[in-house]
Structure formats: structure tokens, C-alpha cells
Image (cartoon, rainbow, N blue to C red):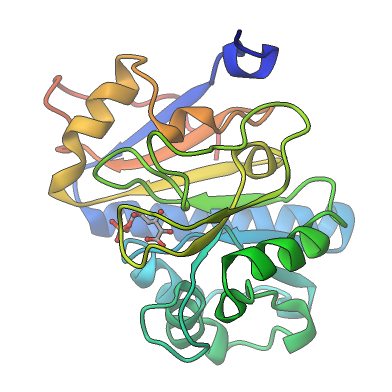
Length: 247
Ligand code: 6PG
């Protein structure tokens, strides 16, 4: 039987862009605005970063925004179980593109210790994120098969109430097979969730999502809905209609 959370609808606001550059500019502006708002209202900005290649130019552009870096706290939505300085690690990319270039205190950057293997890293990271009730902003990508973070089709998504905050993954279809992911439930405990989607290979996953055919990305259901920043061409079903821009 499905739990109430699994049948709860997902609110999606689609934000189509003609080019990836327009998408990136708009995403950077939204992140800066949400950071400013969180810092004014609560004194801190708790952001969860996405892996993959799509956010790299956004991270590079974030180096140059005006903000109070010492109020930022950085978390990761998923990590690949690879040695600490492996260039394929998600935190490595974010560090090179962005974090090395700004003044966020090191104690406020929380990488997933994936070098310890999926089981240990998952348990340790759950302790770190369990201290937080709501993230201010979660950034997520979308894979060709509809995965998001390291939540893959046919695998545990952690989308029922009471699901653990993290999931150890041992047989991911996207290399490397060992990964750690925040669960769908934990990723949904956020004031804002923003998907960043570029790349020609994602049209089928996007079409499924738009047709309400469940993909792992459909399991992310924050109270305020999700904002999907996407290149217009990434759908075979005709134009994606712009929702009134919440972010
Ligand atoms: C990873 C991810 C993954 C990624 C998507 C999109 O570790 O690979 O976090 O969920 O965000 O696969 O990746 P691209 O942006 O490279 O298409």
C-alpha cells in the first residue's frame, strides 16, 4: 500500500529558458536573492549542492556575487564514493569551481565523507544533516533515466515518512556504483528546491515527469513545491509553459 507521502502530489513550477546561458544567469540571480532573504530573516543560508556537470558554470558565476559568505553553510545532496581528491567527486567540482574562491569558513562546508565507503559515510552524514530542520535551498540535477541526486529508478528513494536522511547506494547504474545520497524525504525538507536541467539526453525523463509518470525526481515534494529550471528544447511534448516565476 502507498503511504500518504507517496500519494501526496508534487507541485512543479516549470521555468523554461531558450539557452543554457539564460538559465544559468537566472539561477544565479535566484540563488543570490534567496541567500539574501535567508540571511536577513534567519542569519544563515543553508544550501545543498547538486553534483553532475550542469551546475558547474553556475558555481563559477557564484564566485562573483555580493553576499555575506560567512553566513553560508554548504551541504551536498549526494556524493560518489571515491578518494577525497578524485576529480570525479561532486564536492571536488564545487570546490574548484566556486568554494575555493570565496570566504565561507571551512567549518561551514560539509562534504559527504564518501571516501569512507557508502555505509560509514551515509551514517556519518545522517548525523550532520539531522541537526537541521529545513534547508533554505536544495539544488538538484536530473539524469537521463530520471534520477536525481543518487536516487535511481527501481532503487530505494527514501520517500516515506520517517525514512532515514541518507541512503547508502551500492549498485548505482551511473558510475561509480557506490554512492551516498540524501533521501527524497530529507531533500524535501527545504524552503526551496530548484532543479537545474540542461543536456539533450533528458527529454524522455522530462516527458515522463510532465505526464505524471513517476521518476525519482517526482518524489521530491517540499511543502512549497519545486522550481524546475530547464532548457526549452528538452521535451518532445511541445513547449513547456512558464509558470509565474516564484523564485
Ligand atoms: C551525480 C549527481 C546526479 C546528477 C545528474 C545530472 O553525482 O552524478 O548528483 O544526480 O546531478 O545525473 O548530471 P549532469 O548535470 O551531469 O547531467
